[in-house]
Image (cartoon, rainbow, N blue to C red; front, side, top):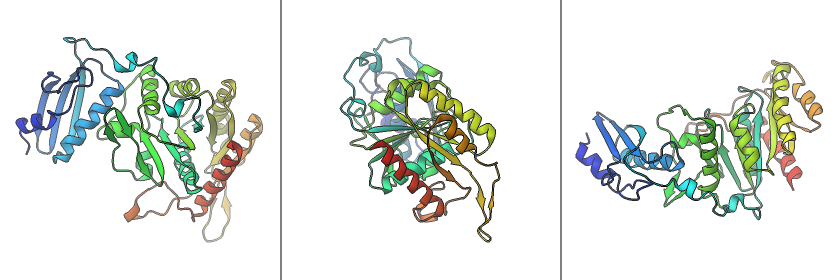
Length: 349
């Protein structure tokens, strides 16, 4: 088992992001507890709930887990004994990054829904993978900051690498992925208010080394809350895909997300009707479990195309290449996503 002295030695090279000196020398480590396989830390910072805190958290967890610690518990508190400038505020007027610059050719597509439980994240993941399979350079931002699930759905177990002040996304199925899930420990809940959500989302754009991309897909939280509003402000040219089920109520609620996009001058590329039907493998007969034609009615209401109707089904689970929500290209549902991806490419070229 690690001793306190060894933990302090391991954390010594990690710098306080605001004081720019060792966490140990700056007195940032306020409390340290060690049990079998577990290290608990309380860290004092000049500013909490910031992107800099999230980067520091990742560094600490990575160092300790590399040393054999099974679980790391972190708590952060604001220090009143020091004064330091918040780098995100100090750099607020700096030049935009390449990804968000006016000269960037990257196209942003937000995957939205009116309510949860309609398979929006599944659609986001599989559309991103389908676009990559068609030769496009794709990034995927898990912007559902409260309900992050993309890494688990794609079978991602590693975390982004941090070099200097830049974060490098994890790549899986040729899709570059960033998610709030990478910055929390042991599936902990995120308890943040609206302004901080927008700040973290901006960090995903500005501090992640995306490289040259054709598309960035954003898996938005359901509804028309803070994150959706922030996306509309940050990305005025963002396009949207609205996900619903055939159920009349789901389509009715999804119309709000579509109306919001239209009112903020965002182009709605089309509607994806998920869970459209269940098709029997033995008889081929279709059962419309959640009703019928909700997506078609929503598309007509918003005057946009119906991009696809995805049946109920499950990907083939491979133990040696685990990705519980990604359909193989040859799977019938995987073929649906390829066809939708082709439609999106045609509409955005």
